[in-house]
Amino acid sequence: MALSPPGRPPRSWLDGVGYAACAWALIFSAQSFYHAAGGTAGAETIGPAIAEPVLAREPLWVAAMWITGGLKVAAALLALALVRPWGRLLPRRLLLMAGWGAVAVMAVYEGAASLVQHALMVAGVIDIPAGLGATAARWHLALWDPWWLLGGILFGLATWRYQRRDQDGSAPVPPGPHSE
Image 1 (spheres, rainbow, N blue to C red):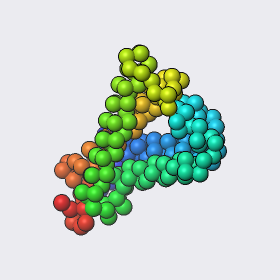
Image 2: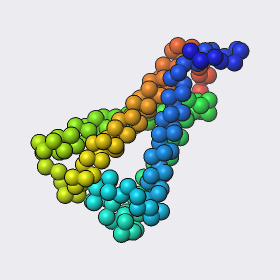
Image 3: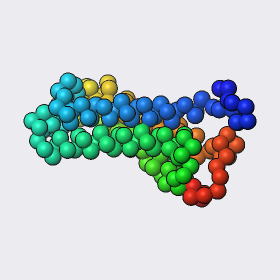
Image 4: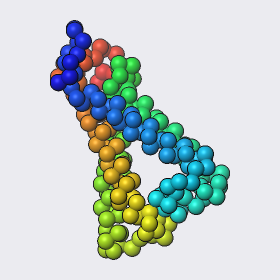
């Protein structure tokens, strides 16, 4: 347990996981904003179906990259809402649904399921789609799928901590819109 100021309950290492989830999302958003702004480094890691129209500066694809970056910033704000006192102003049920929804997308779909699928592709068990390509399939297996899985784990721990925080007395939540 970490030291806490006098009059506050002891803090758990899990309190820091929400900040790590926030950092994860902001780092990930930088990648989207970089490509939206015209950056080309690392484009081969994504796959030609996405990289080529973005690199060709097709307006809908560039807009999609800006929107994706914005969604990742929203995920960072969700992570903070799970650990910061101002997050208690939001409905508890909404934060729990958003947190567990993020876990489902990041850890289960983008992380674990994609990791298995890309491993099967790289191993030659299933075909690699042309829109992904062999190079990007290896990058997804080595970098992007584990990155998504890490984000899902961080959001899972932060959401779990938020869900149980009023049960263990570590952060009493006053009555209000967060109540169930």
